[in-house]
Structure formats: structure tokens, C-alpha cells
Length: 307
Ligand SMILES: [Zn+2]
Image (tube, rainbow, N blue to C red; front, side, top):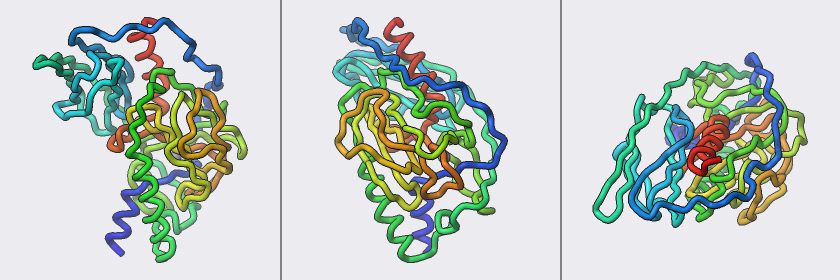
């Protein structure tokens, strides 16, 4: 039982609309920002430029020599794509500075950036279905394990596309933010893992749009924790997730354009009311804050593509 409970804790922890104080949300726009623009050619010699949201849970784009080997804080991340792009993320616990290196042909270039720390609140949520907080029904535990394997397989995707260059848009219009990313949470009185989602309360049935181009790597209509659940890979394993959906309109393998409807908001799984729990994970290792990524990816696009 202990092992299964531990496993359950490792699986996607779904989220819930909260009774916490709500902040009004800026009106959303669904107008695509990724207009055709003259491509900026990739460097022909080893160099490194990065831009984005250098903060805990943030994201950056870097441009370097195509196929250069990139490392973050001394850890190998992978190689830049054929256009010299690579996506990097910063965890919730990241320290005050980061060091990014690119290496090719025996040479290495390194850039250092400050990473802004954040403060995370404690959030209490009650009224959740108890089997989504402390599951102990053997049938439920077996289902959680089965669904965890489906999610893990979908997280391993690293699509060879550049949707991350689109500049992200909000997946739903309007609404109220009911759960911020990174909050420490106490669910039905039980301390839980940090909330790696951004919760936007909107009416049931509100259309959800792809924030950028991508490929669907998971499309399930009835998951224990998440209800309707969709994953989109925007390239290099930058995966956004959409939880608690009432309707799923896409299938695994579908290629999406920015703004395309993928389904509708619901209240299914571990939820107390209709909302979108929007999540982002990079290369199956780093949980990132999608609300920070919107600004970060647009800034990266502006700085690195001169827009
Ligand atoms: Zn959530």
C-alpha cells in the first residue's frame, strides 16, 4: 500500500478550483501572434543568445550553432535543433543564477543569467472526492497505475517542431485565476505536493485553444485524477497539459495550429468546480509555469527574432 501511495504521489497531481481569494484576469486574446516573418538565419559560428523568463518555473529560448550541445547549470540538456534553437526551463527550486553553455567542434561558449526567486503560498482546498486525495480502493489504485503509464509514455515525446517559437496565447478567454503555480497545497486536510498548474475558473464548456502549434501526445476522455486530459508537444518535449476537460476534440498524433480548439472546460477528476488546470512540463523532467511562459516566450521571440 505504501509503495502504491508513493507511486500515486509521483503521478500527475491533478488540481481543483479553490475557494482562495480570486484575482480578476486580464481579458484573453486568441488572435495568433505568430505571423509569417522573415526568418533570422541561424549562426554559422559558435555563439549563444538566450532570452525569456529567467525566474523559478520560467522558460527561455536560446539560439546557437545548429546541433551544438547545450548544458544548463553543468548538466547536459541536448542538442540545438537544425535551426540552432533550444528550449530551457528553470525549476521551482532553482537558485539565484544560471549558467548556460553551448559546445561544438571542441569549443564552448557560456552565458550567465540571474534567476528571479518567487514566493509560493499555502493553499487549502476541501470538498474534493476523497479517492482523488488518499486513494485506497484497489480498483482505483490499479487504474491510477495504468493511467500513470499512459502519461509517462506521452511525456517522453520530443517532437521535431518549433511551436515554441509561436509566442504562446492564453488557452481560454477571460476567467478568474483560482490557483497559482507552485502553491504548497493541503487537500481535504492532507498536505500534498506543490501545485504545478495554473487554474483558471471559466464556465463549463468554454472552448480550450492550443496556445501554440504542436502535436497531440495524449488525448483521454476519462482519467481518474484529470477527467478529460490532453497533452500537446510544442517541440523538444515542451508539453502543455489541459486537465478536467468535459470534452476532448483531438486525437493522439493530431497536428495543431495555434488557436485551434482542442476541447472544452469541465470539472471532472480531482476538481470542485469547472476550471482549466493548465500545466507545462519540459523533457519529462521540469515542471514549468505556463502563465510565466506566455510572457517569457513572447519576450524570447521579440529579442531573438528582432520583433
Ligand atoms: Zn490545477
